[in-house]
Length: 365
Image 1 (cartoon, rainbow, N blue to C red):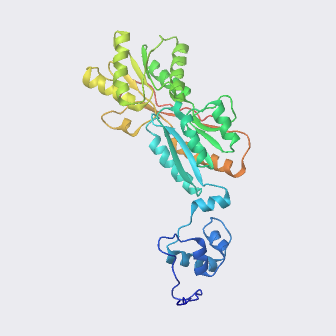
Image 2: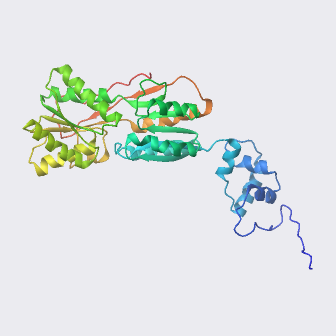
Image 3: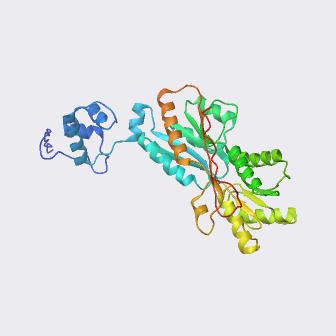
């Protein structure tokens, strides 16, 4: 039987035997090639770890030559952190959420973590995805959906830091960033009433959307305070078809064109506007004013130019991730709620009489 020859390899030689075909390169391989310990390799790929420039240079040169990629799963076993942040939103959420997701992803990446997205058909479906969230052992979560009392307690029981995005927890001490949706709606009604509108209609958002219900409540509250007639309220689904369908229902129930239609978001306002102008021959804003929420990009297009309310979603996303980062590092602490202002964007779809107003910044609760 022929005896196998063995070749010793030392750092600095031109080449070394590469791992077997099909085998993934490990930190051990890098350490062997660089002539350092395996823990030194780990420190090189850990942000903020202490390691000498000379050692780091040797490790990085070896890693490049072996095409080494650190194993995040293996590292998480050592650090007991997945470096994943769950973001939970509803598919029916307002269409500015693509911008929110982009902002959240960038801010989370700056903290050396990655966004893990969970989407819901409806906010009421959140219970169905939470089991998946727990399986990934995320380091924290930003949730833009309604949570029950039991679900919020579950985050605490599992020691998963939680920040609510544009949701206001009423009973539990939970960190949150949000706009005061009711106050924004009251501002919009006030401006329309000052311009002479008397009969209002509301095309509401989904019944399980806390944001939609807060906006509707703000409209009803302000109309009652002003002593104006109760509005015609019809349900919508935050989509384009809901806007046109809702307008037809309003006119059928009222028997005439209302003075103003307030839609739960901009996409429904666009659907309402298109139906009014192109199918029903209603002159907007001469015969009827139309307004929405969120300052969706399309709402500013020349064909629409919707009167709407803009939320500072970029600032909210930045602060939500910063708040979550603090929670992941120090845990505990008093719950903080940061409230932000909405701005009235005066488009050409509503008759308004005074200068644009701004909701004052609310103090953090």
